[in-house]
Length: 391
Image (cartoon, rainbow, N blue to C red; front, side):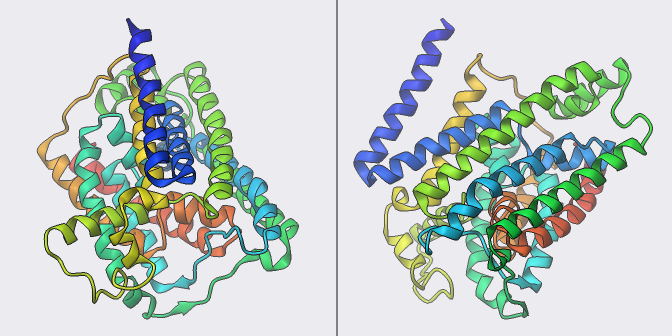
């Protein structure tokens, strides 16, 4: 009877897209459809930014980083010519090099390892039924709301203006981006070659890893043939995500984002509880105040996020209900705190792995590279803390 459940999943997706289109217009309906695609690819390919970094930090497994660098190159190649030639109709993710960017990216990198997911990871894993992500999602939303409220004050702390490489023309900007991604991929591969046994493990070690932390760690510890199958998923995931990223830019006029929509959810929740945001430095000004008055379906990022969750639900249940286990209470509490830190620090740093890392680098904005360097450094700290409290 599996085909019936699959038909129901497809029918639910089509019904959702139609309902949003009728309620909020064709563009919003298409964005929900794109979100479903993002969620299905992230879940189906297990394309995790957080896991890819952790695999490299713990075992010098470079394949997650390689797939991410491929995604950056493809997204930049697909979109930089369009942004440059759009006359301002399409905009990239460009942000200043502020103190808040440095601090926020570092905190986000550490917290996402404790939460076992970044912004997109939290959404798609929640859709897949992860108890940990269910705990993280509401605290992330509240943290994003609060971080946005404080964002103007953080920006005033100082820093440097934005550096947009597109001022040199898109061919030069793309060449620099490709060179940067190639350098990261080469350094990751070199580190792996210098680490004996980094890409190999005994059957006993594989079994221990599978029991201890589940499928994600199994991928990094598995024998070469099994790892090759997972690597193929990552490469295909990178290509599909880049195509979806391009389509999102064309339809929405801006790069794919995650955090703003979650902040809107948090702001709407506290407003419903009686919190007056009319005088808030961020939420009280345009266009954000209007976002709070409009329905959720009117917000570009929110509808994409909603679609992403459903796409992950569909992908995780395509072959039957997934097997899930409940983490320890200590792990859940740590994840909830990490979600709050992630949401807040993402607003300090102008986005998460999608909005700042992918969006920044693919838009040829230097802040994307700064975010990557600081968030990766934070992840090293986060992995160590994760070991102490248990995976």
